[in-house]
Length: 129
Image (cartoon, rainbow, N blue to C red; front, side, top):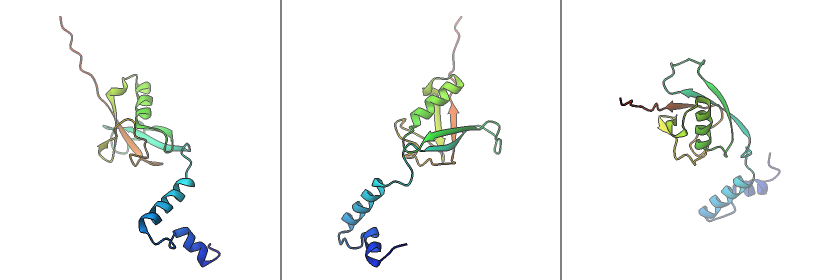
């Protein structure tokens, strides 16, 4: 609750006439006091891309660091779980592959409680006699 009209004006920067400066000031204030710490643990569900709908037996409960964990770190963790090379695994969210690997999950609009699908691309080996 605001104590006065002046404190309300200060919070929404209505006293600043320049709209660009007002937007920058609001952004500065938001970044200075984030709602969630960047290293806060966040739950996520990883599921194989070819899993049956409603099949919870193949789901992997995963916890990542909010605004810090990259797509590449998740791929490396999955590669370790399945004994695969990291370049053979890709992550999919909302029908799009998450890439480049340097982006954080929050950069890719993945948040708490979301389901991210993963694909393991099998390599074909030919044996020559």
